[in-house]
Length: 122
Image (cartoon, rainbow, N blue to C red; front, top):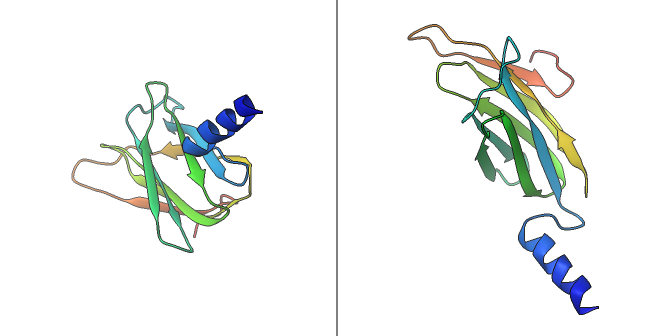
């Protein structure tokens, strides 16, 4: 019993509670090469709270401890256009997969792409 409570406490402290959500994915360029060090952020439509992380050396990221609800997410990396995804729905105790493919930006130009969660351009 004590061991089970300790495991639950540690899971909650890491943002992996039974009613919390997580988002994981891969950030790559058009050639599907990973983009290490890209910033991935997610913003709650309800509270406006933002949580961010960086991709690892293989282009993977994970955001944990998120509450159920509607979010917008975006990925940015130096030398690439930003990509925003809207209407991302998170459900309790589920891990949502959200991959980003960023396009190289032209020198001196910054641009963004806006997508709905179903992949349609906004």
